[in-house]
Amino acid sequence: MLRLYTPYRGFARTARVDTELAGCPIKAGDPLAVVFTSANRDAAVFEDPDTFRLDREARDLLTFGRGPHMCPGSPLARMLLREVLRQLVTKTRVLRPVGGLEMTRWPEYGPLSASFRVEV
Image 1: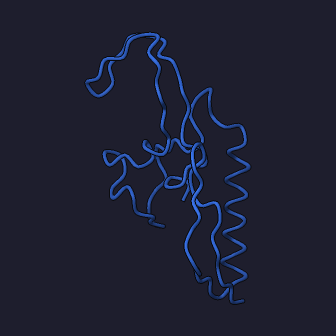
Image 2: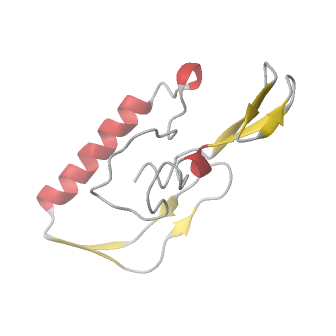
């Protein structure tokens, strides 16, 4: 779920050294956009990248950044999501979506609200 709906879409960066990425030259000082939502749906990394699948292994995700720009709150966010999902699974019999999703806009990405009918 975090792969498809990365909480933050991306960041602006500046290249520190001359390099090349996928055949595209990048000069030191060039502005760059690191777009997590695009990276997490890269077909070269993820089979069927736009589909939510519970059997998919979470690997090479940029959901919370990487390296020195890794979100310090990512362990807490993952723990909270796991607990919410655990509570839903253990305390509900049926969870039915009612209506559509309201999606956020830039810079965040994902559902802003979703309505469900809960049967316990």
